[in-house]
Image (cartoon, rainbow, N blue to C red):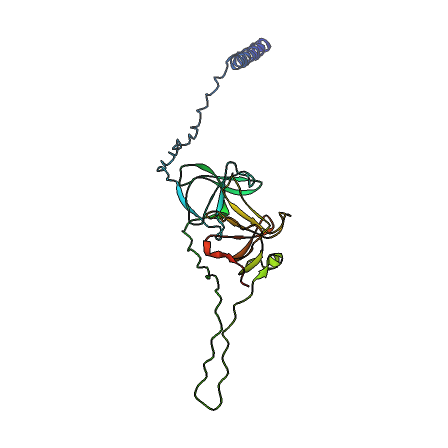
Length: 252
């Protein structure tokens, strides 16, 4: 009897344990839902408004080529000459251009025509016109007048004017203001540029005179003197004649 009671108690305890085990295994835990953390939103960036630029006016520059003037070109090319303009001419700059030959300005000339000019020949300030030394004139010797003394005083000779250099020596005096003389081989006017040329030989590589304002007849075969500054153009010595009194006949 006691043995049966023990078995009954053991069976009851096992039943209770099985019920507890099945109850624990049958229940499904509810997973916890994580709360999302707030994300950082950058503030909106303001879109910059481009500044409104005032309308620009054409820049006014002046020809400053050392007294030689400058040609307006039809294209930014040194060979495309159209018309010469003297130093001091007012040019209206419309644009700037750069190519293999350097910097250029696209301009409007005083007559309304447009073209290209090398930038190095235009200045912001009107150049001061150079004051050229007037052509030297021959001063005759003073006439000696004896004074009423026992011993007459010898006359004082005036200073002599410097002699002109030959046109064949002009290449050795680039940049100098001097007198150059020679016999004219021929003269001609370029129909395209309007420039008047004075050549002293037929090589087209030696010294020559050129004027953009004046023209002379009957110079061929005559000995003349040119007074001014010797410059170069494309490696060739030249003298630009801006005034008529820069040319005269040779002094004998």
